[in-house]
Length: 236
Image (tube, rainbow, N blue to C red; front, side, top):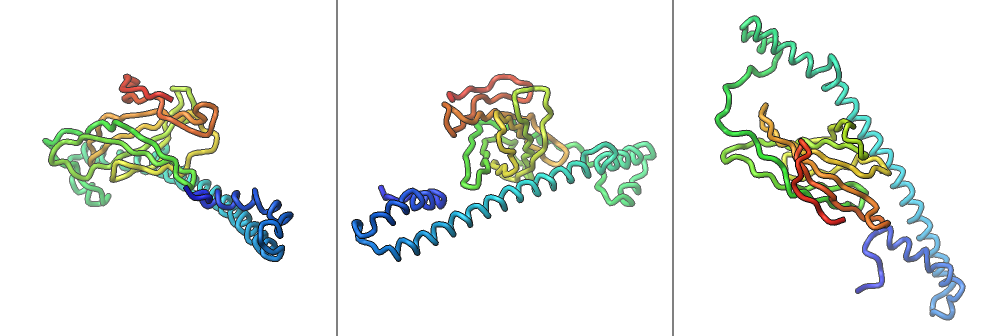
């Protein structure tokens, strides 16, 4: 096992924890005071760069959340885009006029598919990335012959089951990186729904608890379906 920590920040802290003693004992450890002074400058520059990167990361998260909120307001808010599309479709049905879809530049409803809806996501796992984002993974058994499945990811913070889920993004694979999780959120419940065109499967959801054992860890504490039916419980 090497003496240097594997992470970049760990390396910065490695030198910060030793540089003062090295400077005080330069001759005794076989290095020159000038070399230690040069290293001190590099350590300070690395710490400053880390501070700037943290500011940029936080600003990026805030800007990303602003973008998500703006898209939600545009698409899902009362009287917003999805409501307008519903009005157009309703008008086309009432008038039985397919030209409405042509004028609105939206596809006409397709005949019902014989392929069953997508499956329910299960067997969730979570990993913490170096950036602080959470990487979510899951399994999902979809019908044979089904293609174009998209997974919609929603998030709810806290323990109140009445708190609504917030849409945080979608993925064409069985994984998703949540880089917009606010600091101090615990526990967090994710809901993942498989969707294919206008057909949706049943959501699966799971809860992540942070600070497990009084430390910085985390664990999936419970996995349920959207109705709260128990699927499995993992030891924290």
